Length: 152
Image (cartoon, rainbow, N blue to C red; front, side):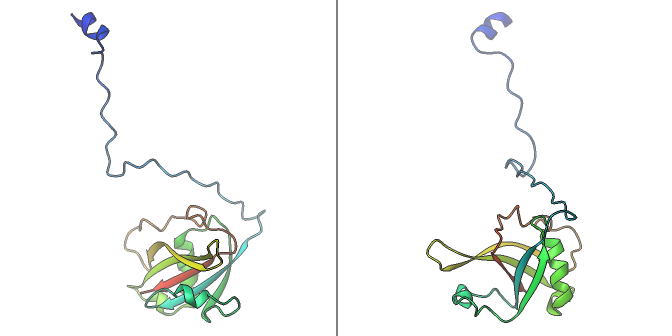
């Protein structure tokens, strides 16, 4: 009887799907950069308290927002590292309850700037935040993009 069931396609049942809330395939990890041998990139960071700058604030080249911080870093820098660097220069970011929202600013194919939000961190997290470990490379940062940081 068991042989008959196997011949008719009634063999072993398939295993149950894996457990877990996140059913998405894991994102590929980017290779870490050898920071001793790799030249850092210049990241132009624009901070603003209360919200992000608008795309119109970046419309004219050379007339970007005034609150700029220039950071030399690598594409494997994560949002937690960048949060700590912003805290060094921004008093508002040092507040215990401060939330930092990160956005990339880059030109589209027509030359108009786009502001794309990519993640959020807390100034002093009580626990690890989901976006803390996202790197610039994971978020598809390209050299020449700006980083806009809204501090709430």
